Image (cartoon, rainbow over all chains, first blue to last red; front, side, top):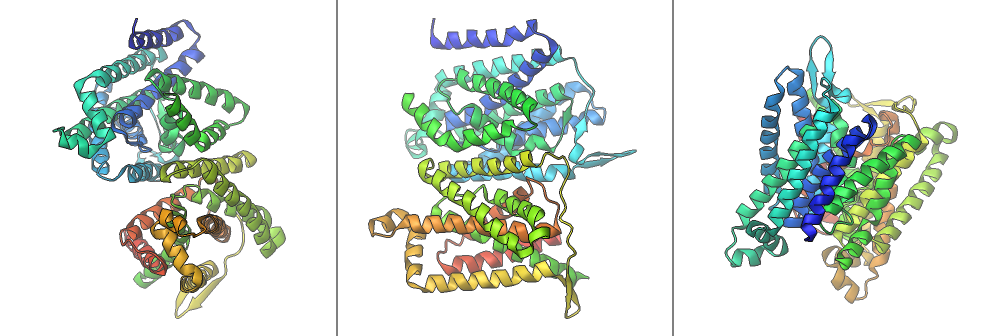
Length: 291
Length: 251
């Protein structure tokens, strides 16, 4: 059995177990699977294109926000994937435009996107009988958790398999060539711009659909979806990353640890995030050396 | 009415220039984007909230002590862990979140804090100006004068050297650690002093520094396009800050 097959089998086990657990754990596993998809979408850009983004809250959060507003205005649920697609295209365009900057400036610029959205989101207010939005955000009717989990686990599975297939494909090899040296890739006839566009589209697409799952799962979205905490989540979750299963497990561990630490003191988990961020360069060096 | 708006925006620009001076000095001398800078701003405001009413100006000593401790901690972390621009920036982001969480956990409340101190208003040539606005104007003049004197002194050429090429400066025997340490420490103190002084004019909450940090980074990005070193970059930074505040304020 190859390593890839084992990884896929392990993921299937992780995804099936919650179906036999109580509601609370099903809810938690559902959240973890959504954030795992979000992390993988980020990892696709980082691992295959060498671009560290702190702005993946753009496709993730914006889809959740716009979908919540659309549901608020009684648009049918089946139109929501269309919103995710649209946001993914807009985000991909922004990421692609930003990718003309060098790698360090790309990090700064994408971080700015998430903070600007975080600062701007409280000003999104809709005037009805009363005011909606603002700091409170938007709520939608609850959906059955099992149904949402089914969709979110399918999305995670598809993202995971897509990444493995892409990694071993010709396109994946071209992406990694662009990651390693753009000029050398250009010299051997790779269309660097096209590769970058595709990478941005794939990455944004999965992040957008993860955002859609987020609003369907939580039934509520507020400006904190664009917070620094969410912006750095994939970076922290994949700090030990080697293969593709490690970021998924990292996301699950972070979500479970966050819920546990939150029960001790509200938002105590951010303390953990801060510590991991501070030591992340050492951890990454250790992880790379081991790899 | 329009003149009043121009003046309000002008003083916002002065504040932004003061804030961004530390950010650009860290970027040019210590070679990283200090993402903990906004948290130092919040730290200063919290020190003012707790100590200003009881200790008045003596509370600035407490502020200097606390911000120096965290400034030194940032420098040590950068030296031990951050070995390039990106990793140093990420380490500073981690410290920023840590400071923010310490503030949040020690003030377990969902509400904004308010430091209730009457604001003195002066009328100069028919235009009303708050005491804090005049203070920041004189602060900017003082800091620019100090920077001018520094760059004209024997240390100026060494600082310019570090700004232009840190490796070459090291090879030629410039002790870059001294300049990088001073830059980080002074920037952290400056940010917290600004948070301290502006605490009477705004609501106090742990993430209050992010908004101003975003504006600071935008101004820094624009000012960096001029590729200047030495005193000129600070002068251009002040002009860009004021222009930015006027344009944003207008909209």
